[in-house]
Picture 1 (cartoon, rainbow, N blue to C red):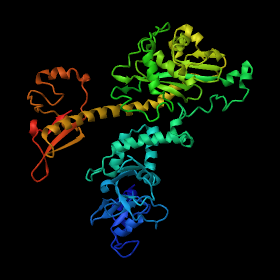
Picture 2: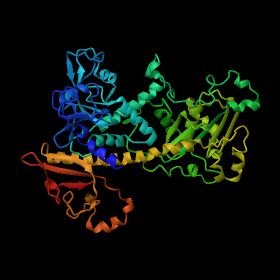
Picture 3: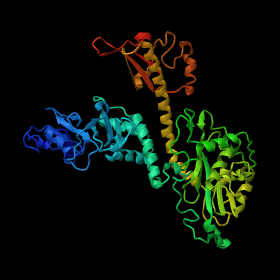
Length: 573
């Protein structure tokens, strides 16, 4: 342990190179620079050699020995320029370089946020600016005058972490900013919204690439509903993995070609009513596992007033109390249809629930998932199958043609209740809807959706954090914009920072001209006891805005706390 600690401290300084005074590459000029990213990068080089060595590694971290310690220097500060559009050879130079807009370009890569000097090809050989960036392994944030990009490797790393650890875009970007400078001494470019947009587009493009959509002569517009979904390779698919004469097999062998489906709803994956599909549309609506939003919502609206039968089994909340999870949400949860044997989602079989677990929602997902199938045996598992199946064909007759199925062609269909849920039903259900008492189903338990929810439920904490943070941040920004307009332009510096513990130690401060109001929650002194008795209704404060006035010398001076108007320094949101 002592040896390892000594080595770490040695690497903070010149270490074994402390006696070397000239560049290790050219042996001519004083050595003062080394690279933290290169393997064996502890050797010291001169400024010219360190720049030359990093012509193809412009995102490495270079440090400069100032006589006492190593301080971070960007390669842009040392004079390195990145030339795009000419990759044929090192001697291939552009005779008409076109600097990025404002000569200010930011690349997110190598786990950091980098300010670089970047030149596009202006001679016409490299093509469009976006083309030059993509060919260099950089994904542009915009298509017009791009000033921000992320490396393909960084986007791949985020996508993997997002799937495995449910890391949000905000948390990942914060880690990049912290790794760039965790002290706050150096100003790090803020590119969160750009990164948010790039990650969304990158994941969408990867879906299209993996689904083979880039090879279709008809282009992306020819993408059929559900075509990008990954089909379960073990489920029966006529024309793909079944023998040609599978329908002619004897009755005792037909179970080999049965499709096992499992349905369920999840009320932990809510979506707050803060936006609309028009304001924030999906990039591939209905191309994968989710239902086509417009058609699905049209179906829901058309049949919204159809009454739902009361349960004749035990009092299932999903049947009798569909509004229990719907308050304040645009989506109270999601419903899904899975392959019951292999735990894979069915194409076009996931959708939002607006008012609990209503039949009209689950009907659409079920029938949409089996529409057009040639299979003749279905085994359907649903925790309220005893109630849901009663009038299913009557309801189907009222639905649109896109989700119609010829149930007359189905030779065998069985509705069962998953094994874990069945004991909560009445005795008759335990006899009629049991997997254990049904032939040709093997050891299927019907609980496939529950296993999938165990993984996707981790997203709920991430989504909740994003929603709360975004809502508070937007509220703070609105207050800042309003305040800035009233105070005039050019005179005020307005910033946001996270609320700290000392900010919560409330002191009396006049708020909007009312000296009786207090900082905590804006309550009057007479109503503070009542406020304390209703703590469960109050929202925790997470942001504070600061207003600072510039002095005559241009320096920022914090104004006197305690008054508002033009002498205010803080107010809590």
